[in-house]
Image (cartoon, rainbow, N blue to C red):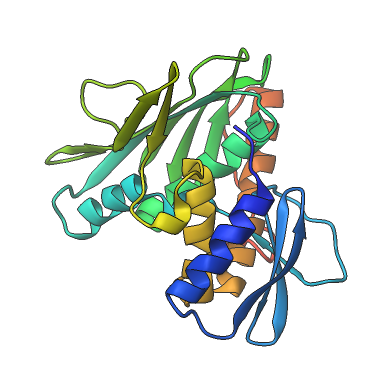
Length: 269
């Protein structure tokens, strides 16, 4: 999977106009980033890397596009409405070919961020295997004792990506995949000329984009409309970096490690 910034930029501009998001316009972009002017300030949305170069054209903001994924939001809503409650654990599997966008570092960032996204709790302890051939297993524990078992890694080119998240509560289980499926399904399949095209969205402006590209557009729109604050995203970036450091240390020493929070990733922030 490759992210096409030009396609994302065009679709975002059309969607901003369609839904009349105020005081927001696209300034420019390059490989892996998009520059947005919002309420007179410039922000650089960058594709989910832990660290950002200090660029003069705006304030760096992480593009945690998976937060806009509909199935993941449906999972979160199941928890918020109490249909599944008293969560005790989660299983996470994020395995994909190294394909120009996904790599094991970005997969770790996604899994760590989703723990806070689902439970509104931070990871405080980590036990991880040493990363071998860009693959690792880890166990995380949150502030209130939720255990997360994570399998993260890269597989050979041409393989089918596997993203599975399963949350276990006292009264039930919620997952992003159908019970009998191992890979994601799509809403629309169009066959022709020996190829099959798939679509998963209902906004015409987003047809032709991959699911992650669609999620990028929707995530930026949600931030610019006030659902997520720019300041909160920058704090989340610092927190995630603290957890990643703990994962690396745990793997190197083969032991359980407490997360040391920096000022920006303050546990109580």
